[in-house]
Length: 563
Image (cartoon, rainbow, N blue to C red; front, side, top):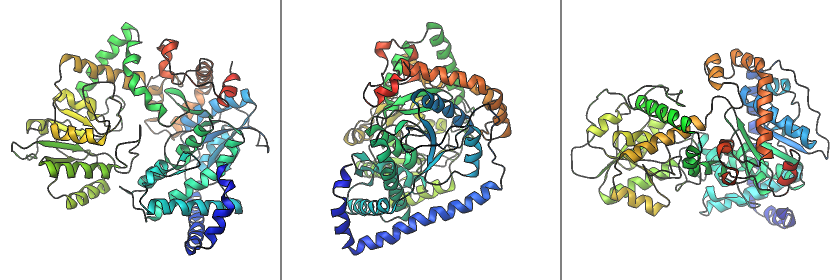
């Protein structure tokens, strides 16, 4: 690895710097605090009711030898995900002569142990230090701190040709921080974890010890960063869930599917297209009428489409107006691609400054099921930009339209296919699921986004665009979320456990259907790899139109085991 060649020189120079010794103490602190917290949480967990063990006919995998190749498995403690991914990992391990290990920064919790041990996965890799790696981490950690302290964006931080900044940034936000603070202990903690993870795992990848990586998410320090390391070394990253099997080898590759939605719809049978088109129309009419839990939104507790009227929210004036649909400030802003803005606060700031300069009335709208901390963030933002009005979260879109609002903006929200049906024009500030269609505006640069906010060019909902919306919904909701793929019926599973995926009812369902799940996952995985098909949704496309897995080493040798 390149950083080994200059490590001695960097270490010697660093030891002469007082800042290095401060970082030594801080590094020790960062190492000890999570361990103390973990010990306390394990005590609480082991005394609780989170025994997730499954009674299934499966043999235990052997431990890891010094030279044996490894299938790395995320220790994601959701039973149905663990079952599906363990079956796939075992198939890969059997074909390639590898063993399987879960991974994390800490020892497995009681819940993780009961779940994965019952699935025969007894080996766990904990990211830990040797003294040499500890001091390497300190040197790199110190350098990266200097990089962003001197003005480099956190999201742009790189080391060993791997972007670690995005995962650090989003992990920092997830800790309850709405925007970056370069002097935050949370930021330092995530940066430390990222460097530690990179230095621990990169030797395993560079020595070709890792056969494949199965992760629950492709973002955040942990699974996301490990995926980026895998991409560098051309190790297959496999993302399985009840609905799909995807095999990627590049950042954000999973979301390139959005630009192929029209091809996906056209490749389906005439009967499917007709039935799903009608189902989409019914679903969306329900949703914009205020019905809860339609389609994949069974998590909703409140609707923004009610017919209820509250006090008037919009000023009656000829000025241009725009409603900004706020996102969860602590969720990953770079969900589908590198967003035009580093986070949602930076996005709001750009909108506020543009509206102030151009005399555009600006209104902020939270989700109806907002949290207190989200409201607090918005109120603090309003103090900085007092000309902005924060709408009552209870106001419906029907009322906003009646009061004269025609333009709304989001980064990539579902409003993009919902609000045009009411007559709104939606401006997207980022790459988004609707990008293949022209029923929204899609900004590709900050300058283009600014122009869209200022010009407010309306999009008329004609029959063609309305049909596009129903087509999009059919693909995004029905085709991408098939009820029967890796599970016999996800709807049946969900109904049985009432949405509580760690309940005894969920475990019982998985035990009863374990043989069927095994057959499905094995068949689907083998079919995908033999056909070099990157995305399972593309099964219906002609082979020449399918996105293919690249035959490059070591991926090539991995793929050949299934031929």
